[in-house]
Image (cartoon, rainbow, N blue to C red; front, side):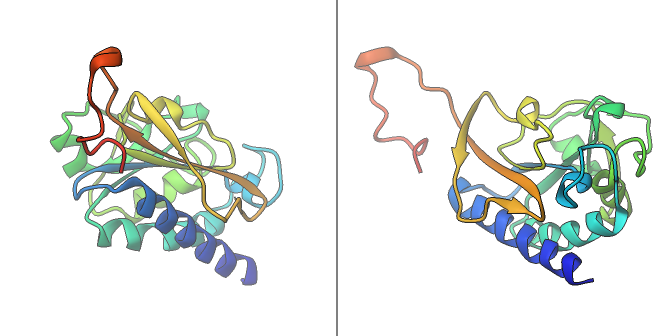
Length: 187
């Protein structure tokens, strides 16, 4: 139980640090990838754990909901890294819904937790999120907008899992004569 409380606190610290750096607007998407096996210090995909996923979700979801953001939870490679999102997110971003129900052994524990905790969960194959949190090197980069910018916070891991954070920004175009300093791209 002590570890579960620690995972909740660490997940909350991580998401709050990411959101401070990312300057997201209501309705933006945060993609989350998580290996509960890695959190426990085991090899990714070897020891999925629903209790660990629940503790991490307890740290993430309240902050995401408070900021009126959408969370996209990446499934494991057995489901081709599809994502669990709220049906409202899929509608807003015109995402194609696919037919699968992630669970602990195919999809991963955090995706299974999302299926249980989201108001109207659906699964989509791809997304272009505005920011992301990767717990345990699950490779969320494929689900971020084109220009990802690393975010550094003091926290480096959740449990034993390496932590990587990223925000995104619009592409810079126009070359050497273009002016960028009057834009909001560099917040």
